[in-house]
Amino acid sequence: MSRSRWSPLIQAVLLVNAVLVLAPMVIMGLSAFKTTQEIFQNPIGLPASWRLDNFSRVWVQAHFAQYFRNSVVVTVASIIIIVAFGAMAGYALGRFRFKGNDLLYLYFLSGLMLPIRLGIIPLFILMRDLGLLNTHWALILIYAASGLPSAVFILTGFFRTLPSDLDSAARIDGAGEWLIFRRIMLPLVRPAVVIVAIYNFIPVWNDFFFPLVFIQSDRLKTVPLGMTAFFGQYYTDWATLFAGLTLAALPVIALYVLLSQHFIRGLTAGAVKG
Amino acid sequence: MRARRRLWLLVFLGPATLLFAVFITYPILSSLAFSLYGWEGIARRGFVGLHNFARLFSTFPYSELLVNAFWHNVIVFAVTMLVQNVIALGLAVLLARSVWGTQFYRVVFFLPVTLSLVIVGFLWALFLNPVFGIVNKLLTSAGLAVLARPWLGDSQTALLTLTLINAWRWLGFPTIVFLAGINAVPDDYLEAARLDGAGEWEVFRRIIFPLLAPAITIIVLLTFIGSFNWFELPYVVQGVSGGPNRSTDVLSLMFYRMAFGEVDTGLQDIGIGSAIAVLMFILMVTVSAVGAVFLRRREVELA
Image 1 (cartoon, rainbow over the protein chains, first blue to last red):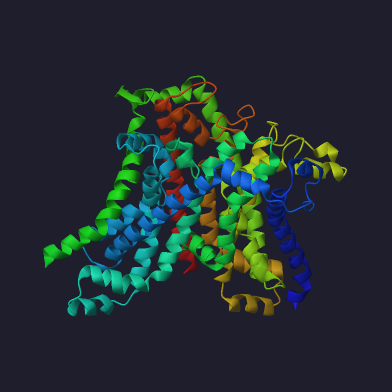
Image 2 (image 1 turned 180 degrees about the vertical axis):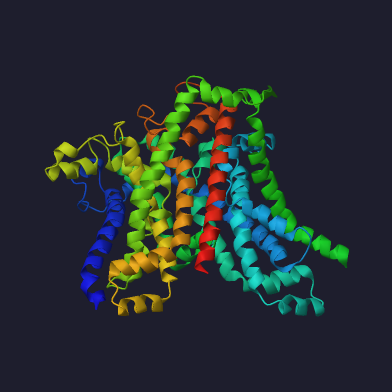
């Protein structure tokens, strides 16, 4: 069989790919335990001792604890709004027939293609007029709004596939609309809710552009923006820099390794079905 | 009853529609309008028609900067297509086969895509540091000291280096899309072709590749949008001016400088910035629309 004849070659190429992916991350992680001098003299090998003081310096002195708290607050709030508003809109669009249904659905979908960053000047002025500049609300609102198109797309699709007698039966039994949505329909689309949450997690957690424009105070910065301040401040102190990079990368890497199957399904949901 | 139903529709659809209208639709439409007004700092003055576009296309330094940045976006797109997406296709074909360790490889290849571009940019900037960076050190110890250079500091190599860093970060994404496409090819097609004596290359070229057409169109489209929106990596690694010597300047950086001002020159021009936004907008909407039509036509062929 050709399968066994090609296997060693396939194995070799995949191994090279894994090394190219992992080597930079492993070197980053190992360097985080070294001193700057050690990094320069011995960039690849294991650290002489597994010291943690680089990490504690980053966590406390370089305000990473604060940046992480800000990133968590902004990301969690954005995703809750995306899931809640997206599910409500997806439910109405997927289960109700009304005039303008298709048009409204297309209106939301248009957001999948439009790059919102090109509207940053009016958005900046709008946030200023609303008094939201330099607050987490500016970030939460723009992330929630730009996450809605994919959420509406995915959730409307899921709601449509549910059998139609489910909600009619509940309605005949006299259940209220909110109860039908919250207690009967929403639990049935839980897999889609997970997909929406994961699909939005990476871009929101990693975003750098909107904090760059909206946030000035150091105490409000999210991890990606805080990183730039941190790099400016410690640029000769490579040990601290590598510890900062490692610490910033750790949460997403851990989450991905734990949930890789969900991640892959969630992240391709838009592209493959789109 | 009817009124109640209408009320519920409002409850369910209201919040999402309002949020989307205020924070997405309104800013995008206003930015189109903004390009038609004169500006003093962040204060809007009178209607000037297409004057901002005329200034952008024909006055120094805007027209030179625009052309320079535009070609850099084109180069980023071309190199990303040729390097990143071609490798991704090959990698997806290999990942679709079952060899020892496949489970491991199918998790690892996607890892960099989860990292923030700020982390990726700073990490590679340290690796590529001309004096202390690991890349030049490895080249030197491998006897290839002639190849060692300031990769990001030399205007000859900076853009290409940055594009390759970008490819390292993104490679997993087209790979996963192609992998999903390959996994959707029915096994009997492949079995039948192999039984008929088709070699591996022929199976790929005649069966897998044509069936991947929709996935490929999507990736070309997303690569185009990504390349013409390129901002984080050049900003983080090379700064807002697209250094050295504007060799990594791209449209988004130029747009950002016009909108929010450049630190060293103090130049800010919202009229010009809005005009650039409109041009980028038209470019992306046109290409997306053409791509969508193309995609649908190919899907019909498959059915």
